[in-house]
Each structure stands twice: as C-alpha cells, then as structure tokens.
Length: 121
Image (cartoon, rainbow, N blue to C red; front, side, top):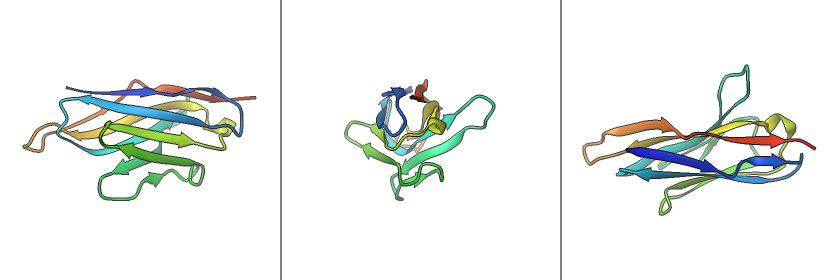
C-alpha cells in the first residue's frame, strides 16, 4: 500500500554535511507525520527529527542546532539536513511514517529500509 524509500546516506568526515531524503509513495490520502530515527548496535532506536502537520519539527537532544528536518508535501518527501557531523552520529537512519490511506481515516504506520551514515576521518 505505502512505501517509504530513503536515500542520501554515506561516508562523511567529521564536520561535514549530508542530506537524507525519504519519499512516500502508494495509496496516500494524507501524511500525518514523518520522522527520522537512528540506531547503532546494542542501543535503542532514538528519535532524530519528526515533522507533523500541526507542530514545529521536533528534534532529539543530541542533534538540536545541527540537524534540520523539512518536508515537501508536493513531493511527499521528508528531508534531513545534517551539519557539523560527529563520529557519534554514525548509525543506521530509518524513516518512519504515519499516513492516512483513505477518506475514512485509516492509517498506515511503517518504516523504510534504512540508510547508513558513517562519520569518520
């Protein structure tokens, strides 16, 4: 029904920048919220940034001031602009969406396949 496809991960040096993209496709009536989460081995998944229709973006404490999330509703795409990257930002980044799929308010919740971000000299 709905797919989330991420792109933009890769290897970057400390202090560098990357932009991640997450595009939703399929049976979409409306996008309630989309967000980026990240996870490293042995740790719980943590919120990076979340964008809803009715509130300003929310950010995890460790990325505030460095990362910016924005959404292009026409393209159904969520972006994550990551600046001043640190080695501790290395993680698998995944996109999550809560999407309304019909006029009755049925919702789909799901994840993209993830994209790896590695920050290293």
